[in-house]
Image 1 (cartoon, rainbow, N blue to C red):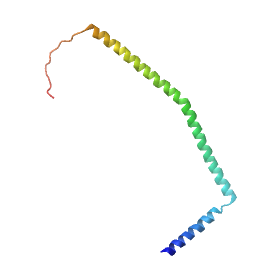
Image 2 (tube, rainbow, N blue to C red):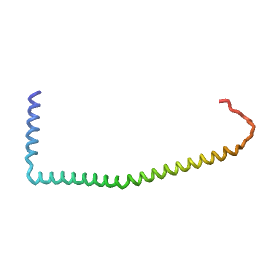
Image 3 (spheres, helix red, strand yellow):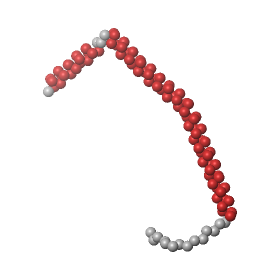
Image 4 (cartoon, one colour):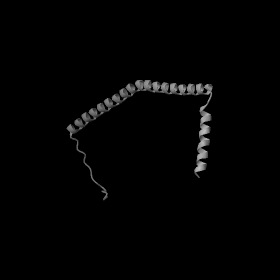
Length: 101
């Protein structure tokens, strides 16, 4: 059992040593691809950062305007409630059917 494991490990070591002895052209190509991927990631990061700098103030302005409009509606509703409360209208009626829940 241990001999087969040793054989497999030696085969894997030989396989990896052959792959690591790649030519200078392959290494150059690998470094270029890695550099391009890093450059693309940095470009995406900068784009997202600029996009957030542009969108966050716009979204905050919209949110604040919605809150201001909501507050004005609340103040208007409170003013109408005060007017109707001061009139003291009485509604009279008769209960015909009352549910017993």
